Length: 308
Image 1 (tube, helix red, strand yellow):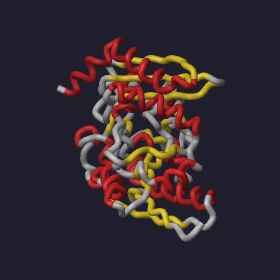
Image 2 (cartoon, rainbow, N blue to C red):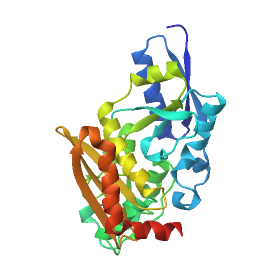
Image 3 (cartoon, helix red, strand yellow):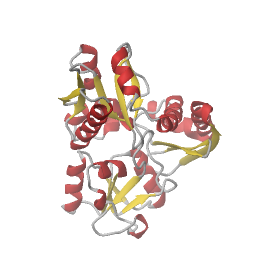
Image 4 (cartoon, rainbow, N blue to C red):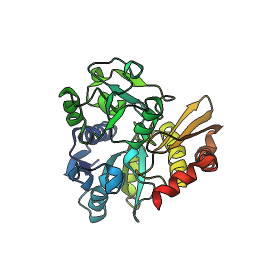
């Protein structure tokens, strides 16, 4: 190949940079002679650190500027955590590849307790995720849930300063940053059902950029893509954003896709759960069916209450 440079739009947090560098490395390995450069951007989500995401507009805050960069031509691709990627894409952009999934679980991190079950009833737990919050509140109704924003290092520093008894983070982020030793316990998915797309990295690019789409297809992982597409189909049907505690996790078991979904009230007083198994070629349909089941159980009331 001639000297082609692929410009990768990324946020500046250590984890975002790790993900972008990982994609750069994979591309350069797959296509010797290819060069990459990172275009580092600050998104609104990175600037607003004093409010929970649910209050300031949700997850799309982390991708908008990166998408703008691609549409304006200052970047060719953008690398995202799939759990930050909204259901809809701007005109002219699409998801070209999803990489193999890292550990999808939530990590229980504490300097004093080795597992979630060891926590005292009134423990101070740090998380800003409504999804994690409602599942913990269900088990520990007396726990004090405290807001926790900022990148992984900032969050760990707050824990180390004694502000919390424990915090909950994504296992994937800690593992990618070489901090697996900070994980006290990877929470089983039946204790804390992960976020839609958790642990998966997605690459977005311009839909009409034939060459870039071709290059990215070499990094695409069909199994992860299948599971994440089922999760995202559920989320799309529920109209899920950051304002509602929604969890969804699909996995391949043999030749079947097994998926579980959850919608809860933010205080953990009501949680609706549904699960089903379907054939691989019906992945998105399985996700939608779980959404329908959750709505029928009563999730529609929670969703309506939050949007009015």
